[in-house]
Amino acid sequence: MSEIIIKGTNRLGGTLDVQGSKNSSLPILAACVLVDGVSVLHNCPFLSDVDAAIAILEHLGCSVKREGHTLTVDSRNISCYNIPEQLMREMRSSIVFLGSLVSRLDRARVFSPGGCEIGLRPIDLHLSSLRALGLSIEQQEGALFCEAKNGLEGTTISLSFPSVGATENIILASVFAKGRTTVLNAAREPEIEDLARFLNECGCKVYVGSHGTVVVDGVKRAHGAEHTIIPDRIVALTYMSAVAACGGDVQFRNVNTSHFRSVNSVFEAAGCRLEDEGKTLRLVSDGMLRAVRDIRTMPYPGFPTDAQAPVTAMLCTAKGTSVIVENIFENRFNHVGELVRMGADIKVEGRVAIVNGVSSLCAAHVLAVDLRAGSALVVAALKAYGETVISGVKHIDRGYEKIEECLKKLGASIERSAESG
Ligand code: UD1
Image (cartoon, rainbow, N blue to C red; front, top):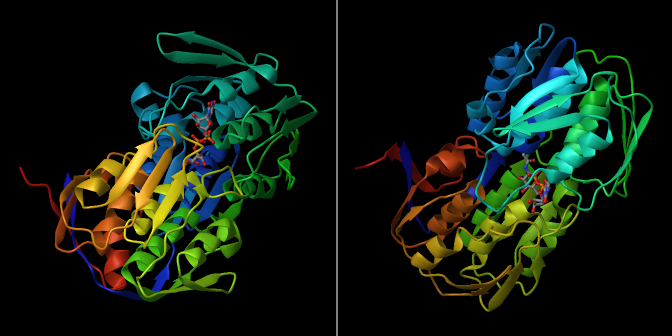
């Protein structure tokens, strides 16, 4: 177990290549299960969540080879339909293997997934949608026994909330279903489009409309394909928050700026200058930020819940009072207590955080308890006077590839060490 040690207040500058998207890699790796062939995935980040997905693939009988950021998944010999509880609990995304397994083998035995402690995170929408497609699901001692004796049948599913994972599971389960499946009020995140793109490259027929409608026409089989994972918009936004808070001038390469336009306005309102060139983005900040009155997390294309924690950290030293409303997860202010220990003035009332800007933050020994809470602590530590020690680094490693190398490249004073005590 390691710790991250940051000496704050350095100005940040230079160029950073943004890693491939975690939230795209995971469902696409799950999609490899339904492919009868070899899939080659480029731009796959080195992350513990990706390792967890690879462990599931190997357990199911796939062979997986990594060469740098390229993963080659041979899923021709899948025969196992059972994912053990220990592998399921490694991450929330393990649940999307359910849709893929049912497509490939007409059955699956899985457990409730693990993942970050940011709320109840039920899977009721996943299960009711898959049942609507004709899947029989029985729950026994925590395990879900799922079977579609005569295959699945396309239908229309209207989601009560545009859940990302449920939309992915429906798509994965319906690619071989008889007829047409239509999902209304589907999630519209770029990662859904990336999944659809991969599946279509494999010969499936998935259409993602611009207004939350997804249509899947069943095909007979999916063959292997070569695909490049989209850039990670949340990682880009995290590093942008750090540059905004510390002051600096950084060019972010390998981004798709159309994926985070709703957040650009927040950086601009805070006083940063952005130069958006589509695949690169330059952010310039003097580090003297203004508060942003009204940030509300929403399903895409709204402000992403995953960027709420680092942006909150960025606003701790902005002049004035910022108001941040978390609408997606009920327990996503895990970072606030630790930020307050670093001198921030934040009050949380239910789903609302009120951030009164302070003139400076100070170093402390803090604990990351979930992935994005951890990223917020990194942003705060980069801005704080003194040496901050962050433990719970395993959460950060779920989503950020070589975070200390990326930030060091930009001029931060950051090290990773073995955990003391
Ligand atoms: C995905 C992302 C996560 C992001 C989230 C919202 C991945 C691997 N993770 O998570 O980083 O924060 O989208 O953008 O892509 N819900 C239910 N019942 C369900 C499913 C969801 O009530 O069956 C609720 C959840 O508790 C939550 C909300 O819907 O309050 C959003 O969840 P969802 O969109 O499903 O998020 P995930 O797919 O888990």
